[in-house]
Image 1 (tube, rainbow, N blue to C red):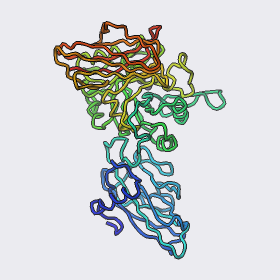
Image 2 (image 1 turned 60 degrees about the horizontal axis):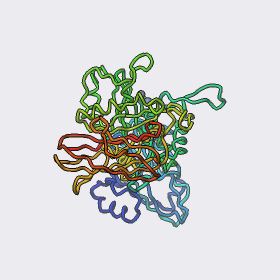
Image 3 (image 1 turned 180 degrees about the vertical axis):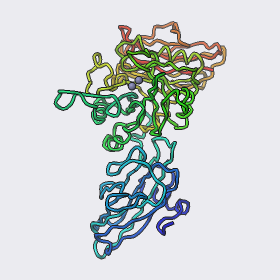
Image 4 (image 1 turned 120 degrees about the horizontal axis):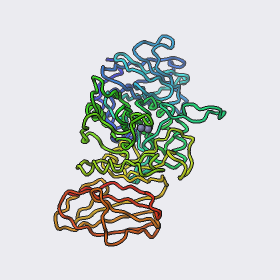
Length: 509
Ligand SMILES: [Zn+2]
Ligand SMILES: [Zn+2]
């Protein structure tokens, strides 16, 4: 072990002090695996220094945060990273930032711009410091904190790379399904004479223009878009970019959110004989798994699209159903809602979500006419903050409604109360036989629409018609409990009957 490298345990107290003094890292971040410290003096001017560290086996990501003193004296330290192949010319140099980045990551599929992604070999790595300027009498202290990532880590780790974009509990609006150049998304070329794989920047800019808070980039069976996300996310500090993939098989499609780890999608092969084997692999990756557009043909018009597993699937391993796909927003008779409700009726707690399935970021027509435009439909999530982990946790918990036409302001909140206990969409509530459940709907921007309550898949006849008569409206009614197991959710329909809002269930008993 190099003299600059000390065990992480010896540094815990020092790290705590840095966190308190500098406030640079997220409070939930774990301590770095390696801390490198050293001093530069005037004699280091115009020189390079290698600061080595050991990378153990089983590491698939290296994240470095660098700090140094002496900026007031114009001391400048450039940064690079060498891998174990050695630094001879360019070989072994995984990247060079100059003085442009003090925080960077290098992983198997993605890296901060300036660095090359790829396998992380165990062995001797080194930070390469270049010193273009330090005055003869100056001294500078530097500290590099290094975190190692491991197979199976969710995409929101390490926390230092993924600070929340907003820190308050709120309803956040997003689109959970889209394709770009990394799969079959295409758009007109610059001249307009042809089509080309559509650069991811257009997707992200369109989502930002629509005012979305988050998008999931779900290319077919690939996570190569994660490398573009590394470039785009720091600039887009109002729009959370969630790496995802559309697991695309001959027996249906499903989105897996929040992981960039490899996943074998070849159903019928030795390693993944069926969906249950694939789902068991996916569960170990901590992401959220959602069955896409389940009610679709699986034939020559749409190969593999419909959910057609060869063997029964253990739905305990699934967290969500794409209840509304972008095409459904135009022809709502084909939504995934009946499939979703059939699962709910079997006792599974599954979150209904929406996704545009956009394949052309340049299609941005307002509804109607913008079938599959980004944000159409919009999934609205009640999350503790705008971060990947918080958004995915809230989807898992069912704190979600779908804004079918992708507006910026339509909203619904459903609360069920029994005595002192209450529940929001996605929650479970105990309602003993003979008790009265108070159901309260808060709506926004749904004037003249009407709410429809659905219990166990059937419309509930309420005494009062649930007509919404204002920009902000609260409607309530009592529902007598029979003590049985039920789920209850709300839809909101426009005056013409069109589906505007799809709420998630509250589960009873
Ligand atoms: Zn699909
Ligand atoms: Zn798709």
